Length: 312
Image (cartoon, rainbow, N blue to C red; front, side, top):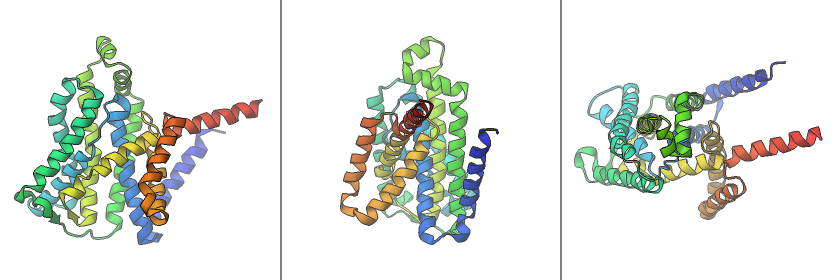
């Protein structure tokens, strides 16, 4: 029997279940799934850049916030349809990444400085918008409500699946090999003929596209946006933590991390709200100490050990 068939069947059943969920699920479950899709999108897009190049971003939510604000302005002031505004928000995020990436990526900034810079850029954007009356200042914007809760659900489901699909394509491509070469040793990669600046620019722009799209969908679903929601650093931190927890530099690691950590956050908020951050942090530390490659690497090691034991 073809060993891929059960896996394909399981994937098809999962997609079917996700597609049918708005027809049967409660409002609470739909809300949770919506946040899960957001974190899958954010963790996977963070992984595209940081997991494959080693340029650790602490402000990847910048592109989420830009996408959200582009959506709001285009709908309210540009009179664009919400669907077109979502796509435009993703394009604006990519353009911002191109503008920022040109000096950042060509300067070959060290990873630690890059993390600080991305965090600072997120806070600068938050402050600029919060003090600009034309952009709603700290009060933000109220947006038209979604026609049905299923609309943003399906939109964000497609965006998260798109992020996974693009990551899988990158992982198997020559482009992905070039990114891994940068991760291993950027100077050696460049001396071997890899155009490191172009590769870094490309993945930086690609990693901005999906948060920009997600920002527009989530702003529409919330029917409200302000700079403190759009550029919340917790989103950037959680995205990075989920990717690291699941396993950076892999296709499925960020997905596993987003699923496990989202369930954990929800359970802790319900049962241990005052200790949520402590338990969350301790678990991440334990996983990193036990398995630096994340949950995916730990699962592979466990599977290999069982297989070896079975043979013995």
